[in-house]
Amino acid sequence: MPPRAKSDTGRPDPVDSHVGSRVRMRRTLLGMSQEKLGNAVGLTFQQIQKYERGLNRIGSSRLYQFCKVLDVPVSFFFDEMPEDMATKPSLANQVQLAAYDDNMSRRETLELVRAYYRIDNRNTRKRIYELVKAVGTGETESGAQD
Image (tube, rainbow, N blue to C red):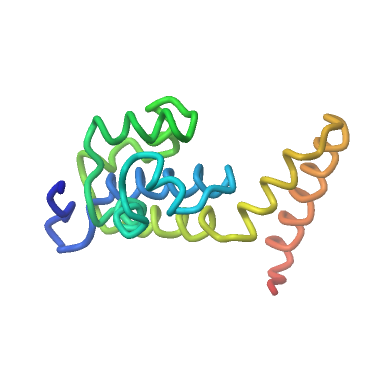
């Protein structure tokens, strides 16, 4: 088993947390359970949980397996990662990653994205995108929250 991925603070390494969150996001977008992903790569769902939380570091051969099963390039797992995260895992980077992960791993976020991409009509999709963007901006400006 790979060593625990810890930073100097005793918390999971921010890069490992980011990669794990991307595994979780893609798995969830595909509607795949942790158990199903685990079976596909020869792991238990508990091991998948540890990878997704960044508690265990994902080795290159395992990352390659995830790429094949989740149908993404290796670069997918590093997309949207702040450039300085790997070189300087500061508290600010960890806070930024945690906020991103919280929003992107929410069930409602993933269900919204799945529903959005099920809309076949491109113009309708674009209008919905613009509507959600406008409503979100309006609420941010007025300070309204639920």
